[in-house]
Figure 1 (cartoon, rainbow, N blue to C red):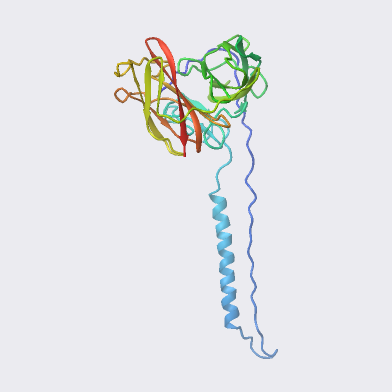
Figure 2: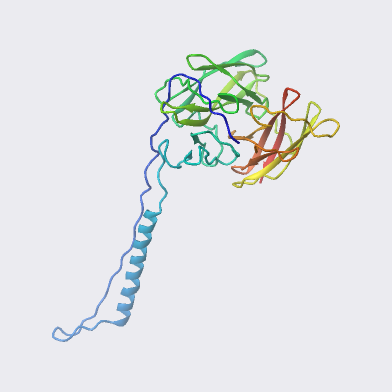
Length: 356
């Protein structure tokens, strides 16, 4: 769905344009021998038919190997694209389509006007690294379980300068997700930025243990290009960590008297629609209100490495349903979090999803 792109003023950033490597060396092989038999020195030279046939076969094989090698080099995939270029190495650049771009699996249908969108690792999940596309997440926070605190961090460019120019996407220039490593304690936060590029937001870690924070933002470079990035960092809340197993997989959840159910079966590597419906205690469809520019926001986190998928809904509702297109990057267990708003209150429905 279309996203706004208003930009705050400040210093610019220059995304990393280093290339990721070179072509792998190719191996060439081939060879052959031609044998001949001779008569007496004074007589004519006679060629054995079997030897000639063998020579022709070997020569043909050598020619096929050489032609195959040449075609392989011609069709070899291009190296990583520099920012602003063609897509490669997990980077997609908007072009003549008005800024719309291809998204990694799981990100759904939406656009960033003129943005270069940086994807995550090889399978489409993002937030696996503290550094990506020339940007680094630098947290400066100490959490204490059950104690009110403040989450503080900066986004720095490849010259270690604090970034201060961000596009407003879904009504906010910065979206922060916090979750404990056992996928409990989910929080969706919107910090504010100081003049020096330091972001801050009040937070209380309800329980001790390792936590993961995700900074989901679109930076604006010096030349005006927009680069959408998701960075992740680990934080620790002091105290004894007692991880809980994931709840059983289910397609419905209840929160504050609302029942949220979805239909659809995600598949690995295939975009599948998930249709969510929210109903009240009377069984009637709830009067959903736009929240951050949409009728719902869906985040999926993968158990284990905590790979991050942020999925936006179709801009037009299907009756009472809100439709998200989700591509599972791989098999395993996921925890899905759906934010929705009714009566001015934002609630989060949680689901466990198993992908075969």
